[in-house]
Length: 216
Image (cartoon, rainbow, N blue to C red; front, side):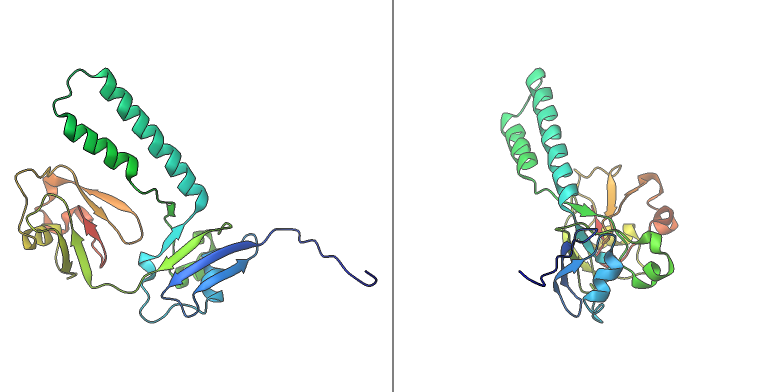
């Protein structure tokens, strides 16, 4: 109509969602090129109870790539089983295949959520895409131990304890434990493998532990 105007943006908007320990959780519209720094500021910043080191960024593109990769792993594993004539326990194999096929697919990307670090070094910021979801957890005082130990689950975090101590506090290894494959999953999504030969040396060969970490 008369006097109408049309504005065409050079770049599209990005719709993203932030949940958890921020002052104003919800959906936000970002410009192309905006990252976690801009989103957290738009959401009013972190609550005092926030644990940015455990922040989770879920990306639709990464989730689709992981879905395709999981299907490929499943197909390859199935083909190897079909070609093998040494299948001992059909029930265990069926359970393993079912577990592999039904494992949820994650689109998590490892990202920096510390605002001070992002302010000091813009290159650490992750550019957000349309449909991205961010979850900022609250601070945890627990560490978790899972796998072949006598008592799986949570244990109160103590920064002076090492991996050996936490395993001892959970009852120690079961006879079925594979001590050459011990992993630590950090709250930010990074994973480190523990060198079992050095488990009894001080500081577990420099592997740090943080509240919210998982020893497997």
